[in-house]
Image (cartoon, rainbow, N blue to C red; front, side, top):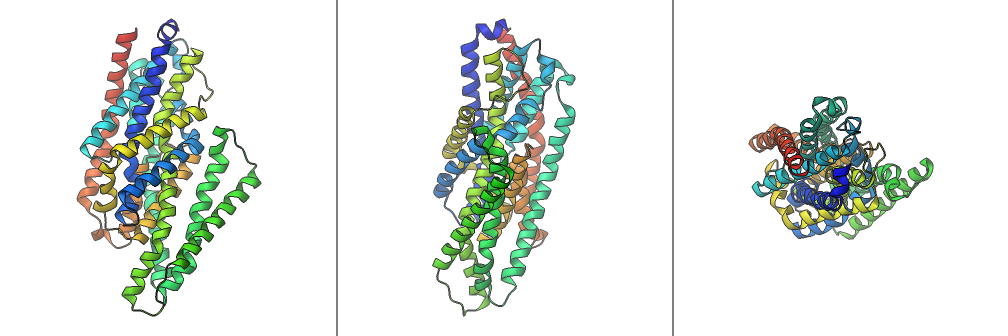
Length: 420
């Protein structure tokens, strides 16, 4: 505790600066997961995608980012192992932020779409092992997180495959695809608005001191879904399309009708991404600030609106400066996307991500988004996928955890050398 008191101001500055640095890396690298499908489908330009994502990522971080933040900050290492030496846990969190930030910056410069979740979880584990040994890590909690990494791409693929098949059956394989697109489009919009708002209202808003009862929350989320469906219906009605035309023109017109839908789903995915991935940066920052302020290890969450806002601003800064570098991989290289395909992939990714965020599971948005795009490609056959690109992505996933864990251990040893 004497070490914390002696360097309190410096520790506080390090926690804030490295928290912003880490969330900057998340925004710079993981933006492809939120925006890639929309840009690849031609529904949004890169500039408009970045502007829309900046707003929705910030809102997702501030309104629904607290649940996973608690998991990252308290569920990976055993705080009781640091009760007598809280300064060591402080150094673990600072070292983990530095290590994960460095790895994300390197990956972004190289154009690798790595997982921010893998980076910070690996870094926290590596630093925790270096500080107190194997007993310091919650291996059972970590095993649940690891399982979610494998389950999440499968869920993303399954949901996107089902959505793709449903659009094919309900719209494309009908006598009048244009008419059916206008009929079923609002229903798909309702699903997006309802699920995202339900998770946000019932699980996320408590971290900004806004609470709704169970019935009130469900009714409000349903109302938001209905409002979004009505807006989608109005936007589709404004697009003038011929009812009498050949099948090719019908199919092209249906793709055009789904462009407004892509704007909604793009916003939902950015919100979901912000709600889940902000925790990767501010979880360790929140824990570090709590230790600095109390000079002890506590089970209570230190998540505040200020910390959530700092994380949101860091993500937006990374998104605006370097986000375009890794956007092309998800949007163009895995499989060819059209507005309907991009819509299915983005809806699936946003639903799985925001649901996992509400449950407190720090799933990898990268895994979910890649799985969702693969699901869309599988609907047209394995030949529609670029397996070499997918293999390269899988390799980047495999090396992220050990590299970030090694950097986390090195970061802790260096900090311990300097301060103790």
